[in-house]
Amino acid sequence: MSAHTQTTTHMVQPQSSDGAAIVVENFSKSYGAHRVVDHLQFQVQPGEVFALLGPNGAGKTTTVETLEGYRTPDEGTIRVLGLDPVRQAQALKPRIGVMLQQDGLYPALTAREVLSLFAGYYAQPQAVDALLERVGLTSAARTRCRRLSGGQKRRLALAVALVGNPELVFLDEPTAGMDPQARQTTWEIVRELKRSGVTILLTTHLMDEAERLADRVAIIDHGQLIAMDTPGNLTGGQNANIVRFVAPEGLDCTRLAALPAAKSAEEVRAGSYVIESDNIPTLLVELTTWLRDQNIALSELRVGHGSLEDLFLRLTGSEVRD
Ligand SMILES: Nc1ncnc2c1ncn2[C@@H]1O[C@H](COP(=O)(O)OP(=O)(O)OP(=O)(O)O)[C@@H](O)[C@H]1O
Image 1 (cartoon, protein in one colour):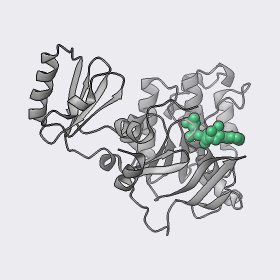
Image 2 (cartoon, protein in one colour; image 1 turned 90 degrees about the horizontal axis):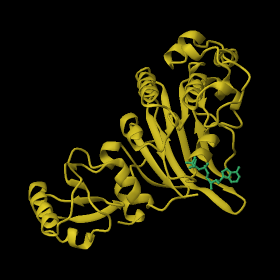
Image 3 (tube, rainbow, N blue to C red; image 1 turned 135 degrees about the horizontal axis):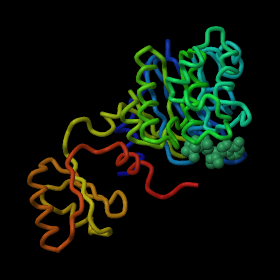
Image 4 (cartoon, protein in one colour; image 1 turned 45 degrees about the vertical axis):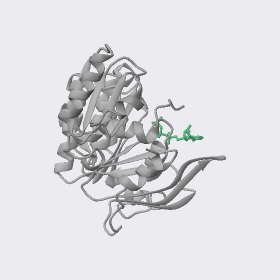
């Protein structure tokens, strides 16, 4: 299915902009002749966790940095908490928290010194030691930033984003480089923030992260919005109509799709196949018979609804981006 057809299927248009925490209308941005954001349009409601997904170079960071006031749009309207992020930056900055992608701005300071420095910018910051504990950095509090591990740097960046008690937080790939424990802690922090009414805009390359955390997901590619909805709606909700299996690569998908109970068949990654069907038990019989008759080994078989990753790859293609 082409990206164009999918667009109509999965696009849930935003509600009215009254009271929206983030409004992006007709936003475009170019670097020289290269248009990296192309008439982007979405809104985030207060208290919502909204995930922006897209392949490398899709325009996510450009969008987020424009929302944060670090870049100016060439075209369109951007409002964050009702304010223009560039012209009304002074009013906006105390109300938002930003977790930057690049770490290590203060290599010679300790984690605690960095957090204390940022706490000093806010009227009512969080207690520094409690926050260090919350993000799991108590034992690294006296470590200089240049000696922190990649995951610890990400956790310090998260603490910096939260120290001012923001109403809205931008999390740009928050768990990149974190180990599974730190990732769980970060997800729990995001859920707590949501429970306390904080709005969160998240970018991530981890589809399971988006599925777990986000109320709504927007997929962008080449600077354009190609799908936007709840993870459940994007992946087909609870309908178990997908069979996923792993076998040698290069199986003939035309023949798989021709199995009587199959609606479509696709090799989504090398050796990883997805078949859609309205009659899963019958399909399983047909598929396993077909594989047995041709002596094809099967190393994994699962039934369920399509994952966000399947949809993402279908919409954005599988070629590697710059
Ligand atoms: N300051 C700049 N000058 C020129 N080109 C830029 C600049 N910033 C970004 N780009 C280009 O704009 C495009 C979009 O980049 P952007 O960082 O917004 O993508 P992204 O979706 O965040 O990607 P990633 O997932 O890799 O972080 C890329 O092709 C990038 O090389």
